[in-house]
Amino acid sequence: ANAHNAPYDDNLPESIYSFELQPVDMNFVYEQLTHLKDKSNMDLLFVDSKLLRIAASPIAPSLCKIFNLSINSGELPLDWTCAYITHI
Image (cartoon, rainbow, N blue to C red):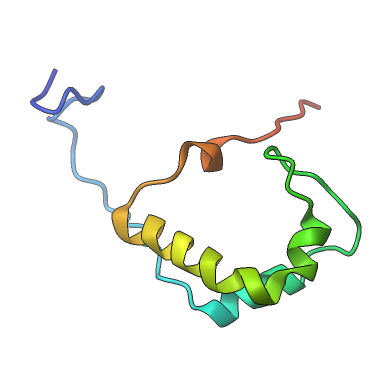
């Protein structure tokens, strides 16, 4: 194991690909919220998408701050890494 106890080999070649998230602004968050479907739909945390759409104006600034804190720190809240998976 390496000094950080990472589960990978330090001798791997450097990737030729890069990926970087850019900070979002409040208008972008607001637009995304207002384009959610009109139909109620609960997510994993039981948050209703219709409620998010209706409350877009008052919650967009807070969501923008949370998203940018995550982007700038490079860390995702554990709840953001969960998903429903349906096999076909």
